[in-house]
Image (cartoon, rainbow, N blue to C red; front, side, top):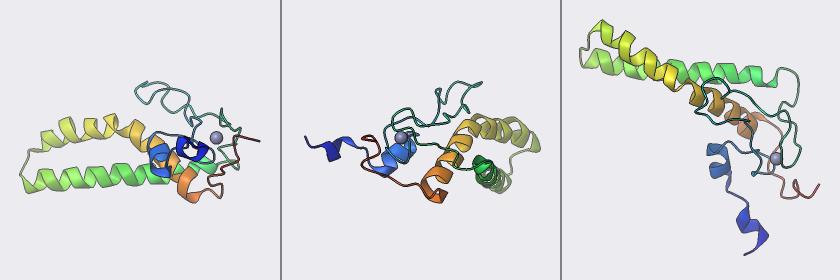
Length: 130
Ligand SMILES: [Zn+2]
């Protein structure tokens, strides 16, 4: 098995919260299912040492992406509930909890979008050798 085959594809490493530079190191310190620590992000990649927050306030932009996720989800669920004439209580008891339960995913994937698509740092096959 050659070395190249061991490196996960970009989509797999994106979906599993891996470093964009080496694709093997974790970006987040704890499981996404840990409700108190799901947001803890490593300062540097544990495998290649890449600094995730390239400049001060780099992750602030992820708030806007996360806001877009939440607003989009609430809009879709709101349109569905209006279309099917669900009562207003439904919106408070179902939609808001759904958005809250999905907020760790929203938080993490907004940071991953920032790292993978906005950051100037891309995959480096020699990242682990340095
Ligand atoms: Zn790395």
